Length: 279
Image (cartoon, rainbow, N blue to C red; front, side):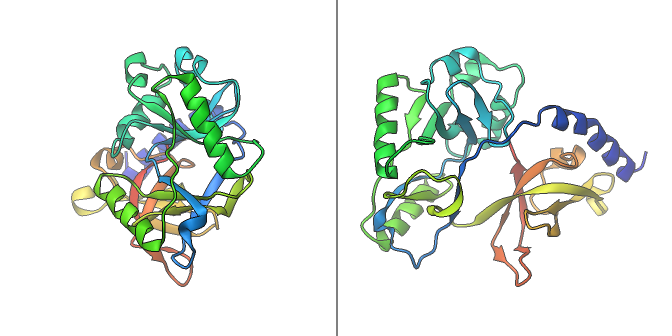
């Protein structure tokens, strides 16, 4: 069977799984990009956790895509009966291991006991973010459960202090920082009240094609053809692990890619594969 044919067969086999798990996506707060022209003193700053986004509606835990998280019953039973938003997190630089745990349809108790639910937003709550952050700390304290953690939110004195904190976080294996306007009411969607600051940029895109490899990658995947939210198509061949080249993510799945900046036409510059989107 040709490489192209084999890739198409793998994709076709995966599509029913994708359709069968499609659910309405929760309406979430989404960060925009930080600008050095802004004054950080009005923001609360937390680490940007390299985890899997999870929305708790008071009864069910869902991925960002809307698909139910296959969490053990004992885990969700310990969560409060009010909405929360946060990240399932295993620790810095452990995303792949975390993803394997939370995507397993039959959860493994021992593995789930190693991760934490780090919450950073209180959906639909009244008041400014500073008040909601305080309430999250109270909720975590009242739960008295090490696996439910409120993200630490602190202020910085100026731009220099913000950059020092970013440097320290990244040097320790962290992904970056999130800044949330302390005075902002709860607002879903992407806006300038929540901003992310990282030493590089990343985004999600949909897999729309598989391009066969050449040379040492002959008979395997050479590059993914991706479509971003604006409908632009581009190829990503850098950063693909060997296991993924042998068994590519199916057409219609979502992946995260890393890039330096955008070209004048809006395409990512120096794009490389980061991971399959866990939601």
